[in-house]
Length: 209
Image (cartoon, rainbow, N blue to C red; front, side, top):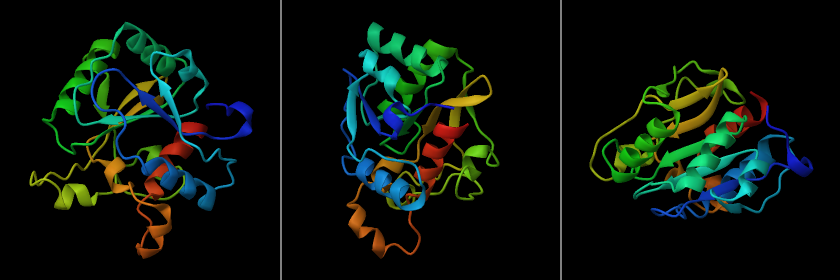
């Protein structure tokens, strides 16, 4: 379990030197709104942007990393990523390209193999605890990006993870949840089912597993 510094959950976006880290800019406030709406967790509603190379990373209960382009960590970024995860931190990594052959996917997966070993990133079963940490799911929800995106016709029926001491340390998605949740939270009323609910599961798992 990750402790909450100051008693409140806060969303941390990881800034890294390579690639484009500042995507899906409305997503954090939308997800934070859902956590406030559905849970009793005290929440700091302001997104924090922290350089992966900074020691500030180690104060974060939850980190998000995303992009479309190259992921090539420098030494400080690599060292902090490894230490943060191995000390019990949680990183949600989401590929904005929602594919399996894009530059983000290839380079991020290569970074994980280099840091944690070539077999570290593995598919997780669709009955994993993360799918029932708050709401009940029978696997990762499909996104509209997958169904109506860039013509790749890919629907990913699993997520991958790096597990440290029996607990997910890095949750990895090719499903582009960031784009799926990238809208003003006030527009949520137009959705028959709130599509950010799985984000609540991810945060709850990060805080309680």
